[in-house]
Length: 171
Image (cartoon, rainbow, N blue to C red):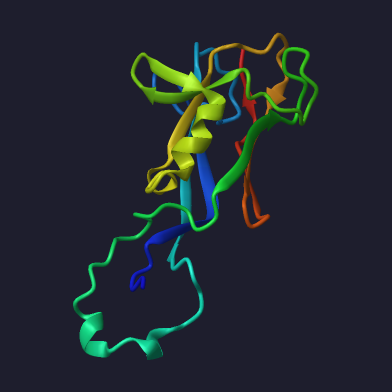
């Protein structure tokens, strides 16, 4: 029987947009950086997988001897089933509000990246969303329209989490 809140439930996310030189770029000023990084921090709570209180079945003396895992050590309460990123404006002939997953990469370290869709197994692993994640894009838009990038994450329980950047104008 589990005696700790060792699953994580994401309830919201915040994003910070920055350039390849770590400068903040969503300030309303046109940016000319080579790469845009979107750093996501996932906020939530530690929860138990089974919400039914069965504590009356446990001898309280034994409860003190349990080996309990920490918050999120067993992963998400509800796994990520789908993830996508889009823009509110046309982006290099991709219509507004359509997935831009093929243009973004999952940042895994200096000079290292994976396809965007690799982010899903990362988030579903124990502790994955607890530490946040970065994605990036190097393909500049062909026009000077600003873009609000929207990250959409759908969980197994049907919940969908949306997080938007502020408008970024990139040339």
